[in-house]
Image (cartoon, rainbow, N blue to C red; front, side, top):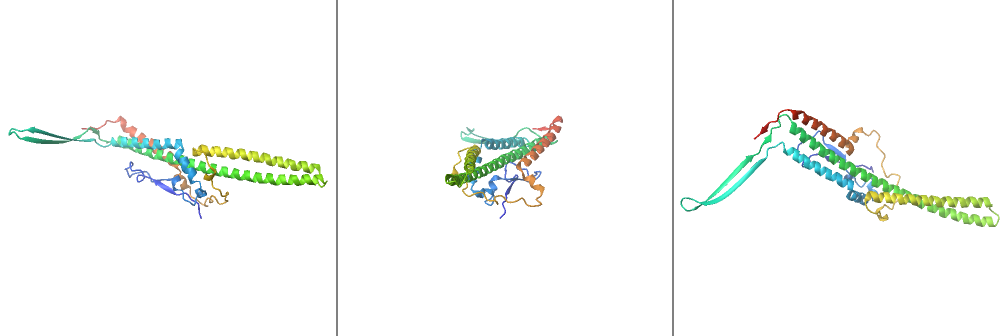
Length: 292
């Protein structure tokens, strides 16, 4: 059973405000919402990840950044098209015969707009569109990074908890051995050196337990900081760590999969936006062609 991450396209179909079909390419980014039950989240970490995505303020800021970029794109793209105004007026007045006459007047007004002969407005629109895609990719990168941190934190907490349980079992075993050594020392079957060595082992086990308890507390606090709320033991998987939690990376995997990384998409679209701004800046020194 192969563990895998599904990917979802980020294109105009997924963003209706991007109506231009001439995108440089269809963007495919890993979505934290499309991880199937064969992946690591089958360990019961879905609730923690969903809570982290809902409570993380940085992710909220990233979402608002996407919405702002959408509004800027809509406003910039609207400058390419004329503004049409429609007016309707109705009146009633007496005529020469003494009857009332109804008058209905309708009009259409075309506001002044610029003919984009040199591509300045198109360049600004393309830059705003690429900025929307970059913002959305940044949001997905933040969400994916947060989900990875939550999973890593939960697994670290579970691993340290297992080390703590192992240390407690070790301490119980060494304390039982210490009692047996004390009895043997009383009857002369064990030396004082052996008894002292066993006491040292018990002290070492207690020190290891204290260290494991501190690690568990630190892991729990770090995970609570990521999730945005206290983490209950019921939210963590009860099963121990399995060696096949993650599938091995397939041999010969193409490097093209790196293009699906949201941070790579964000950098690419930021470059596209910069190039579009340069293309829009060139015609700025040329005469504009307003139309009235």
